[in-house]
Image (cartoon, rainbow, N blue to C red; front, side, top):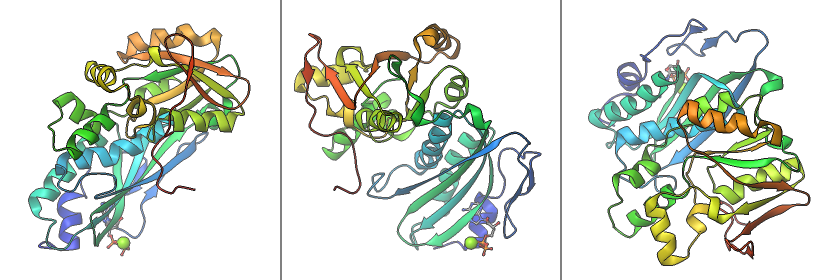
Length: 321
Ligand code: ADP
Ligand code: MG
């Protein structure tokens, strides 16, 4: 590494865009000291991104800084928690981590953190194959957290944003095609649905963020809640490019089982459906009703004629059993 560990921390990861009053001690000591308010639970989540597995080698450093935080913010969003503090463990290849890469990475990371009121409070910096681990801390009242286990038969299933564009970008990049800017942004610059997650407290029954594909992640809600779901393919929110791709290939796997969407999938009792539709207008985020929670288990997908269809892969999994 052309720059020392302590220079890296001091130059790029010491000054957050904001300093929170509840951070009694931030970067620089053996531990950070944080003061959570009374009546709140800490919502904590960790994610690792490894070069060559979770992102292409050579991905733009600023995008990577953004995305490595966005995936963690998405977890907080899925619990309805308010983002507060974050720590960052960076493993950097010797020789490759130059000043301009670090500058761009920390810009992407810290500017997204600043937008969400998050302070960087510590981390670790080591040498090895490029990998980024983020631990994020948020606050939520224990009774308000949006768990996976509270969906009920008869609830509507909603999803935010558009599905499948990130998976389309991955395929295009693998085939050396140039994705359009909006498709590339879906992969590299996802916009975590933090304000939506917090607004869904008291409205949604269950919630999850879609990181491994709609079927896999809605499947987690169904399993945790002891119920089934029925989805109508014709209702799934798609970009024009995804619509054209499906028209050409009849391949629904990117939409249903692609990874990296970072949208929220949530269930809503009938009495609160209108509140969701109102929220879509207030937050200016597309929120689409795509199906219903049913008795039983598993997920059924219906085509435009109401006929059940089979999808071969349920989502991205690291370990196959
Ligand atoms: P220790 O040896 O006690 O683990 P380190 O030398 O690893 O301490 O880190 C020194 C300080 O810098 C600690 O406060 C740690 O949290 C912080 N730190 C290290 N790496 C990072 C990073 N990538 N981002 C933010 N803070 C970091
Ligand atoms: Mg350390």
